[in-house]
Length: 469
Image 1 (tube, rainbow, N blue to C red):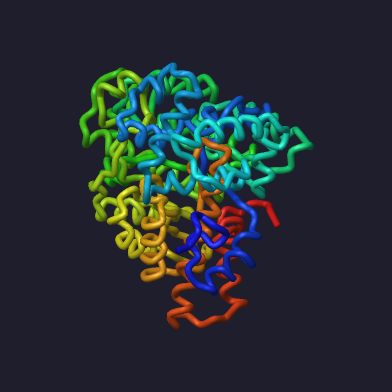
Image 2: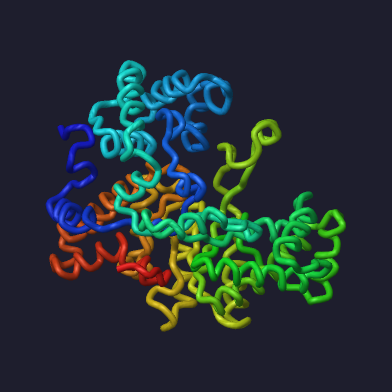
């Protein structure tokens, strides 16, 4: 029997161990999609206790605590942090097979030097050890990033953001990790939401463009894109229920936009028509600027109305959606391609059943603009576990070129989540090592090294055009 999460954790053969320890584990991290708060980096925040680090905003953990019957008082409520931590430790005892069990213990090992098991009995010991460690200077936010070997990270930013904290970070010569904004214009697309008109008013103010028409809105958006571009932005992102394609005339779009500005209800079809027009417009601008377009879809959000009204969005009440019509996805990509050319594009579906679909869609739009121009994103959200990662990489290998894969991202709000890159790299090396051990791929150390280095780091640096070595 193997020891619990020892140095060979998840590595089941000799080639896997060689690839991980000699190659993957030595590579830096580029985190091209996360939800880190740039203010905390600029101010070099230090956390008072492990609950602030682990449970503040982490809806992954909140979901599991609810599944364990924990009262909301100990999750998002006003319970003392020590009691919240205790409830998480008790929950973790039941989390056999769950990635949160592995992530939590990887973080304890790598950042706190704790190689035991966190449970209800050890919670006091771990609480005291972690909190003592968190007071040290090397546990400040900036040092956590640097000591994790992160070379660059992209935050997630709204078009109306003034990017003040990015300016502060950029001007500080004592911090050499690149922190770049990433463009997320979801609020400008949500014409069906009651706050749409107010958002348009805010966009008009920050862009200094009066917005009365869809054409006015496009001018305002372009001005904000130019500002983001000046600040080093190279990445965009869209959170969609699904990738839609419902074309409409310019006149129809203007009428729909007018309804949104006037707080009038739009139909589902009108909403899709507006979003289609928006994506066709914005993708052309991405192509012009050389930005990468990320499309995250396949999620049904805010399913518990009672708790949404109490806590708001992103609090752990989302699920996988099985509605993502392939014809609309491919028609949208084709229309963008016809409308000025596809930018480099990454497709993420929350539904693992879409892996093979995406794998075949990629091949329809690849060209010599870039190596692996159209990508399948890494196993995302509910899928960034051992099974989901293996499935996604196997599907990509079956239908495309795994060697061009962009690898892992954290998609996290936590500064301890960089250990997930180690988790991913172990799984990736074991998968590749298993194929080699089975005689399915030759043991060519030089070629295997290039593949593993690429997936771990080099492919993303090249693909996004980051100015890194």
